[in-house]
Picture 1 (tube, rainbow, N blue to C red):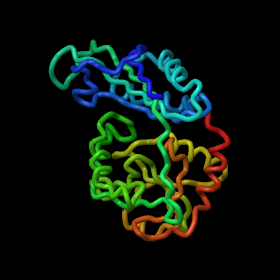
Picture 2 (cartoon, rainbow, N blue to C red):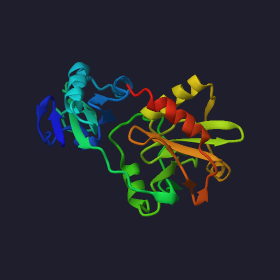
Picture 3 (tube, rainbow, N blue to C red):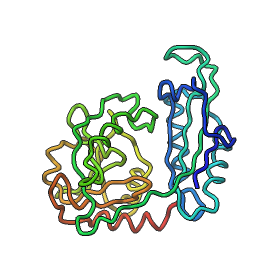
Length: 272
């Protein structure tokens, strides 16, 4: 089922001097596709454009990119399409780009991952010992430098935990290793602010917009690790999980998922 296009042509390789390979100099998007259609495609392309502008990456191939995503999604009941855009092959040595590089775009289709049967234990989340470095210049971007998440996943007890939350180097809760997180306590629903690090996920944005339509106020703010001990509801979001309620957080069974249930119903009704 897998298929890959590199700059519009079927291929499995890129140049060894591509700056995405050499330095992680690029961005990516992972797009959920259902019934032959890419979900939330406009939001994905908007975020990709914003990332290109912030990295000063001269990519203007959005129309062929949109067509290639549609081509790989067509005829598939359910799959993931991953988009990678790099600055392209280096035209000189060193970290600083010359400015004449030609961006590389890679679009690949992948099977929808199998969801394990969790039974009564439900979705379980812990806290990772791997922290996220603070860099406001990269905060929010889905750039290719994912080594912190790689280390967090390598350290995760896969038999016991479905996901791990990651803290910033300053000790604030930022999000999951592959998700954003929303929490609720007596004050209402809140989610970490991402001005210093973390990825501003597409489903995070969708949830914030859906909550506004429901009249639910979501406070975007700094979240201390100590608050995890008192929240009564937690859910994590990404394009594969959607709105995923957390049953057990750091060994503690959570009492409910009322916010998640309301939001999930609204979001599932509109995926384009």
